[in-house]
Image (cartoon, rainbow, N blue to C red; front, side):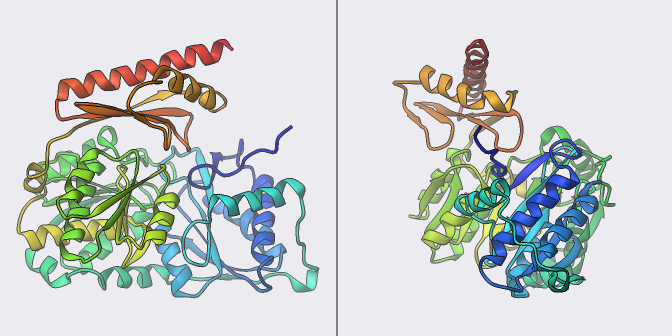
Length: 461
C-alpha cells in the first residue's frame, strides 16, 4: 500500500480527533523536528496558532514532539499566520510551525511548516517529512538533552510596526477613515482593529472576540458570509469594510455602499497601484484569477506570471523572478517589500493608502476597471474521486482551447471557466467569467455539468 500523503495545498489539514488526533500530531511533530535537526543541532522553532477550539490542544502535542528531538521551541500563542511568519526572519529563527486551518469550518485544523526564510517549505521538502513520518526514522534525544520550551510573547507589536514602515500613515491619518473590521472571531482580532486605530482610523468591529466556534460567521470571507459586515458598513456610513479569514492572511473588502467585493477585483486595484509607483514590472497570480488582472497589468507594460493554485507556489515564483507583488482571487495579497507571503493586515492598510492617495472611494475605483462578471461555484466531490473526475473533465474538453496548468481552464471567445479540485476541501471549484453576465452564468453551468458528468462516470468505475 502506498504511503499516505500528509500535505495538501496548504499544509496538513483534517477534522480534529478524526484525522488530526493528538497522537497523530505528536508523530508528525517528531518527524518535523527530525527534519529540522538534520540541518544542525539546537534549531530554534517558533510555534503559533489560530483561535480554533483545538489549537491549544494540538499545540501541546506539537511542541512536545518537536522538543523531544532536541529542537528549542518558542511558543508565541495566538497570532495571525503572517505575524508568525514575519517573526521567523525578524528574530532569526530556523523555522516555525503554525497550527491553523485558515478558512475551513471549525471542526478542522491544520499544520503549516515554515522555513527560515518565513515561507512555507516546498513540496519536495514536505516529501522529506512524509518519508521520515512513514519510515519512523526519528531522532529522539536522551532525557538530559531535550529541547527547551519557552513562551515567546510580543511578536504582534513587532509585526504591526513592520507594516507601518511600508505605508503613508500621514495620508491615511488625514482622511480620518471610518472602517468596520470583521475578523470572524479569529486571530485577526489581535491585529487589524488596533493597527487601523493606531494609524488614525475610526474602527468599529464585529465578530472580534476570539472564539473557535466562529459564532458570528464561518471563517471563509465570501459574499454569503459577509451580510452583517455589508449592512453594518452601509448603516454607519463607513469608508470601508474589512473581513479576514480564520488566520488573517487574507482580506476581503466591502465598499462604502456595503457591496462585497471579489478578491479578483480588489486585488487588481492593489496590483495596479503597486505597479504604478514601482519600477518593477513583474506580478504573479494563480490560474484561478480573473483575466481582468492580466488586462490591467498590460497597461503598465508589465508581465503577469501564472502559477498553479497555492499560496506557497505564488510566493516561490515571486522569489524566483523577483516580483514585487502577487495576488490570489481569494483575497490574498503578497507584497514583497514587507514579506512575499499573503498578509491580511498589510492588504487592509494598502487599500486605505490607495483610497487616501487617490482621494476616491472603493466603488469609484471599481467602476473604472474593465467590467468582468465572475461567478464562483463549488460542487461536492469525495477526495478519492478527484483524480478520476479530473481525467473525465480532460476527456470532455479535449480539442477545446484550454490550459491544464492546474485543473482544466477552458477559454472561449467571450469568457472562460476553470474547473479544478480543491486542495483543502472535498469539493470541485468552478470559476467562470465573461464581460456578459448572462454568458458567465451559462459558462459556469456548463462547467458544473462537466463535474457532475465526471462524477457519475467516475463513480460507475
